[in-house]
Image (cartoon, rainbow, N blue to C red):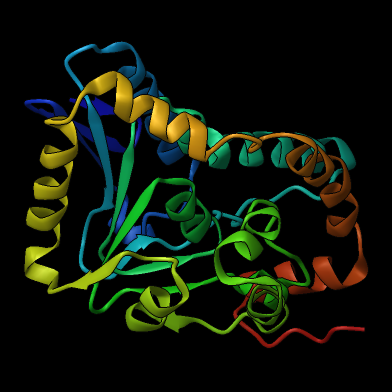
Length: 253
């Protein structure tokens, strides 16, 4: 089954969601966002599905982040983009059933944020994680209110202010990922974990997610939705995005 640019497969009590635009490194295009949204809705409403797995197609990328190839800097367009993308990235947290991100390659920007919004991350040994938005004169709109809870405030600041990627091993050390897995065994390991969770009492599992996620989606996300459109209006953000499109080094003011 296919929703937008996403393949959806039901394997017993487990749903497998595969981002499927490998030529664009599974960036968060309209088709990817549409497909993930529809897939999560299906997981939520299908009583036979207990656990979901999100992964990327191809060997290079889980998800390379937002697709800014046609980004519009008009104030109304920026506001709408922020509202949509933050709501989208928070959706895995809102899903009542547990989700596993099987990160098969790079997870940058919005791809990193989609992964940390899931309940668990299993990382291929060749996976890379990062929030490189600072290179565009921007900041991650979702990770900026979540990352410090995972890695601590100083490390979250370093990752956001420098934008340097980290390895799968470092992601495990920081508590971002549960463990690393050989690339060829990643999906097998994710399925095994999903099936183990699916075998547990469904209501207790759902309540565990609800209790551990209590307090998420409150004032912090509302503040991000309200504040981040202004960052897109700065000259540095315009220069960063323009330089990215033109494949040159930005000249920040």
